[in-house]
Image (tube, rainbow, N blue to C red; front, side, top):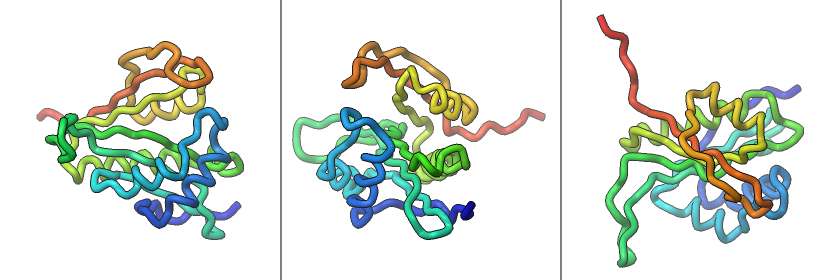
Length: 169
């Protein structure tokens, strides 16, 4: 089994490879189109990462954005202090090798560097493996979103504080 290389930032040039991997990871009703990946990765608010295997194939990605308050004009709103993990995908043949956990850690560090104090995501309530991953990574379910996904499945809204906790004493 090839070892994973470093987790690296995703950028606009990765949009096509990310879109292709996304189509392998998710049901067609749950995939983003290429234009959406281009938009997300081109955003100055993107906090997104990729991981390769030892043969330099992209086997995982995470797309996130810092949250801003909506504005009526075209300008960017004020930062809200939180990050949103929009999508995490790992190639079927590369799952259960720690790639998603490494992507999460990189994103959390990326959000911290941008001054975010909290991160949130939505996950299929029926995806036990993903729910377990997020729970063991410190995410807590705060809400169940009924019929959130196109297939009618519910989602769990999960959050994690990014504040460093220092022991008392």
